[in-house]
Image (tube, rainbow, N blue to C red; front, side, top):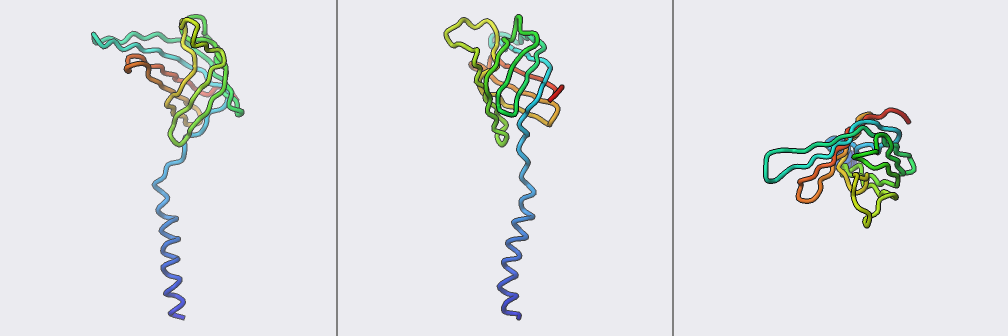
Length: 148
């Protein structure tokens, strides 16, 4: 009996250690879905002086469980109304949007929700941020879930 116990003890130690050691991992950030409203901010950071120009507007973003999105709200001046698809990577906290209304050949007059953003989401508050060329442009979305 003692001989069998010597074989079982190391196996039990490995299994127990594996279960206990997994406590350091954090759960992936949830993938947002539903309706979110809040503020979009475009910050232009000047490299030649210590000022930041900020323009902002209120928008509504709907994200469907089928990975499509629509941007509405105050889209008259700063942010364009847009729609397309998105792909979230909840392990690395990044989300990539592909705007079907964006044209790379048209003049840029408004910001479109397109490209890759770092994001944080806790089930209610949804924040995204991306940086432009040479880190002089910052796009920030500070949204709150308002519906399904």
